[in-house]
Amino acid sequence: MTEVLVIGAGPAGLLLAAELRLAGIDTVVIERNAERPPFCRGFNLNARALDLLSRRGLSDRLVEEGWKVPHAAFAGLPVTLTLPGTHTGHPYSLGIPQTRVEELLESHARQLGAEIRRGHELRALTQDEHAVTATIADGFGGVYQIGAQYLAGCDGGRSTVRKQAAIDFPGTPATKFSLLGDVELAEPDALPFGPTTGPGGAVFVIPRPGYVRLITADPNPPADRDTPVTLPVLQAAVDHALARHVRLHSPRWLTRFGNAARQATQYVRGRVLLAGDAAHIHPPAGAIGVNIALDDAFNLGWKLAATVRRTAPAHLLPTYHTERHTAGAHVLANTQAQTLLADADDRLRPLLDLLTRVAAHPSGNRAFTETIVGLDTRYDMPFGGTHPWLGRLAPNLPLTTPTGPTDVATLLTAGRAVLLDLTDDHTIAKTAAAWSDRIAIIEASCPTHPDVRALLLRPDGHTAWLHADSDDAANTLPAALHHWHGPRHR
Image 1 (cartoon, rainbow, N blue to C red):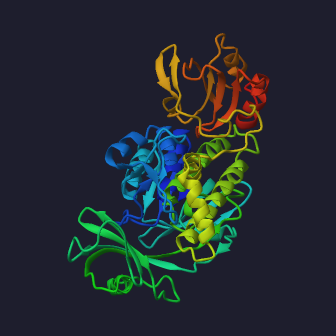
Image 2 (cartoon, rainbow, N blue to C red):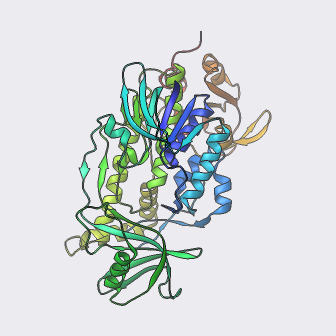
Image 3 (cartoon, helix red, strand yellow):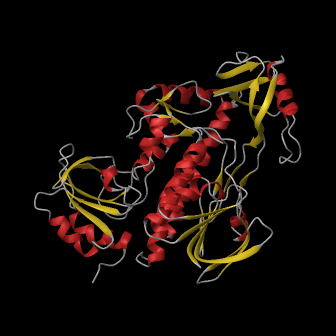
């Protein structure tokens, strides 16, 4: 019996396991692949994902290894969406292989004590009001059962967990398919970086060390989308698009993907939860997949941990669905809109022209960028006034404490909620003392924002309550603490 069983060791599962272990929750991860796949699904961490990872001290090493691009990915508009000037501490997209991100997250989870069983596969699950029981194949012909208080499905778009839990997955099926191939070119300079357009379509090229990644439309998709992609199939599609032969060889990874968009109706069903692609799939436009998976895990981890510890109010875990289902719906809408714009016909030309002019304006450009990247993500907070930070990821404020200088990101690395008392007499800290067993209470000063008197930061970094000079929110602090962290300690 374990406290939480996580199915899937992708970005969502590994980060969730680390978040749970940070809170001291016994966690076992089940991953059907004995080894991490040799191919790389993606190469992008966006500004919001980096901001979140920085709240656990995980971003700096990735930033050192990756390459920075000062704009966001957006298909369909002939305008660059710039990140400098947006509300982020990381005003760039980071080029870094998803495999490297997973390596770091797995190392982090293992160092915190997570048990990761590779080569094991979920076959079935049942749940009752007390626990979940999972049937697992061990990879050697054996089958065993493991019980858990909760089970989190982070096992991809074809999630076994979602199917076993009978959670509906409505949406739109794929209507168009593209081919992706990591291959070598017989003539290395035959295709430049970016799109190359021909009479039959376009081929997008991403150079990688020793090979290139090619993406092009599948002109003849099979009835069964699971039909393996072969090098001749990709070669024919590239030749069709360009109306000339560019010889490909030495394939590393060949796959097909479509523009399906689906979202689980429930992210929480009893003691079963979904995160990442198990909860939502969407067109690849905007390169958002890994990033939203990490976002799900950050939101879920602390809520599930508090629920397991029985310090959480009854309504806390359901807010995971409320908050992340809404955010997921926005991502589906954003990526579907990009797909439509990228394939705009004469009927959509006026809309494309309008959006292009809006995105060319500095204010419009920033709004577009923050929406696509998720920097505008705001969760409903019932207490704390109307300050623009309320509900959003709090900025990484520089702070001075009795023990020296620090900042918001550093204070959040322990994975606990933080109350920042920035008042001169520190009366706010006294009000929160009854919750000191669940939150870190920090007396500090913030010279860059003298109007802010106090902030309550959730473990995921979002501002749950804020008191400023211009409001009278101070008396709502006990209600906010009770709402997010349960009754005061007696």
